[in-house]
Amino acid sequence: MNIQRKFLVENLIDYIKKNFNNGLCIKTLSKYFNISRTYLNVIFRERTGLSIREYTNKCRIEKLRELIKKGDNAKGYAIGKEVGFKNEFQFYRWVKKNFGITFNELKEKLSPPPPHTHNFQIQVKENNQKDLSLNVNIANFV
Image (cartoon, rainbow, N blue to C red; front, side):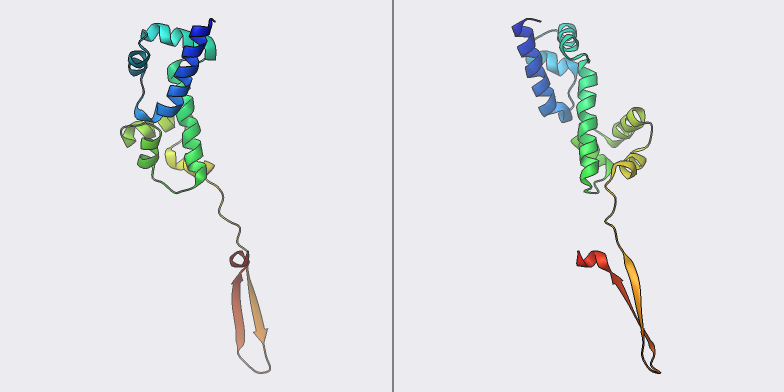
């Protein structure tokens, strides 16, 4: 691959990483780089082994995983917008197609586990007095 093609593909990769969430398509990219769609896809695949669509999809998957693992409890439609979908129906369909499970199942699978809590009860009995009990959650002390 000559230097000019290599430079073009590197610029294309950088552009996709920065703009995949803005509804990128091959038509937009070919206009932006002033190159035919076919040629753009051919040199991209030659260099990366992926089509532009596959690479864009890979970027979306990485961002989706990052957002879910962050655990900010965002709704599907909000996360869908952040990874480049115009509406939640498209996003939910894309998740099902790429992961084979629903968004809620994926979110449950990838979300960080809740902090460990250890509850125990202390009972104190004094001479002929009522039972006193105290529930303690040691997670509050950490």
